[in-house]
Image (cartoon, rainbow, N blue to C red):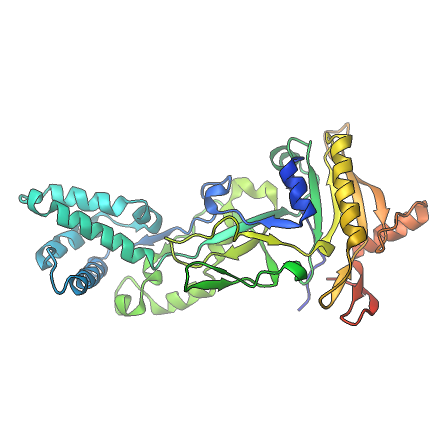
Length: 393
């Protein structure tokens, strides 16, 4: 497979936290709650207005309650019929709304209309929570994200993510469309529960974000056990298969108003248990430092902060030794962003280093090395210490 040569930019503020991230080549995968777009990662699954669906679902939960309490349940077929009929009228309802408690509220409103509501309200409230709990085990995939951009000179990107131009942007070169984990500090899996772990690839692929004003709603029945939805008029089994073939698409979808970001993201799959979350420590990974190939300093970044970044880069590059199998070493470039008179941001190279991190002082050497940097030139070290010039795509 052919991959496009790609440079991606990760905007950072000039803080001690960002300097620490740089020193230890850290990547923190943010949860949906930590993103600045409240709809980012939202799945938009909805349950349709189908009485038979709700009858099956409520009976399934009721049978589980009976098994738990040795055949005893206060919710009989009469109440299930009432609840299913009312739900078919009050739907569609999204999966997110159910997890936020709307189903419990709907049940409460339905019961309040019954003549004997005082006698059954407590039982129905418990039943509603059990329905919500049952559905939580069929939740959409969770995702955690690290954001990059294909743009290095956008006003809004520097203003929003580059600390109002006082920050900087790290430049990463993709290898086979991925960012590799640090081989000496690679995480192969993380635990969701004591018995459930999810794998983490050693090379994490970049996913391009798609922008649209339209919401692509999905049928929440596709998330439920197959035996529960078989032969329902609201479910097409072929649609279920097609859905799972592209089930990650909502993790890379944003409203068109964010299109200026031109975002690419790394995604850490968080499984599909809505009640379980990865801890912040579990979402902290370390990237292969060899893929960091440059830095753009913001137009307002202080000289002292520039020196901090250069000091860390110099220390990391000079102490870097290819190990643990094939590794790439790229040229490295420091760029400076400047405000031009036509209200554009100009990004120009300031210092160019070859693969041995030796600065190129003459104009011709600097131009040659910069051209190699742009083309993806690298030295590839094999497991035996051999070195071969290559072009990385």
